[in-house]
Length: 282
Image 1 (cartoon, one colour):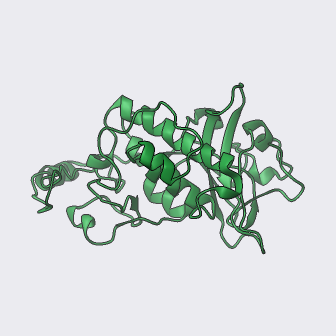
Image 2 (cartoon, rainbow, N blue to C red):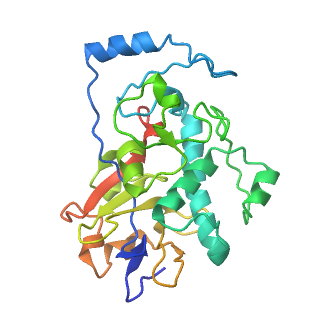
């Protein structure tokens, strides 16, 4: 897919298609933090059902509890495939894509949430999926029956604490910068480090909404070929509601506005980020 003379838009502003990276750093865990985790691990959260006595450790002190991180390689692989597949499926739906997807962050939230669903026929019909892939479901938990229920996205700084389950630290909505700061972590400013389902973030300080994100698809799951793609939503602009676009990485690299090139030498490129629920073994 080629860019037009007006460039690419995200959040109603001129941008290039982007893959995502994460800017939070891997923080060392102090002895005091180890003691704290040992203490809170035993706390009964008084939550009915299978999550009544959660291990509320936060090994990376990034705000994501360990119980939310995907612990099996099979789940992590399935999550990556579902994220990319669901975003690309919305591109193929064109103007009939899910109504909630109205900017770049909304596409990320949709793909993340739906990747954690039970992917049966009823679900596929509800979101008008054009084709159902042979990708396993996530086994660890199923949205919205997660330990955090429907509020999947961290919206506050700081390490996870048991009270965060009830104090509004997690929500169903998060904008692009919140997804970058609290729900993903920095991997690299080298695009070669991106894996399927990762994110690219850009920041343009001269724009009203400076943060823009996209999902790195890698090779398409809908068509054959060696090209790697990224995907994003343009966001509304004027009287237009915007649209989902899927340029190739090659097209992104040659975008006429160098501010959108995912290169180390571009200060507007924040890098490749990865979802915090993949952190550790991934």
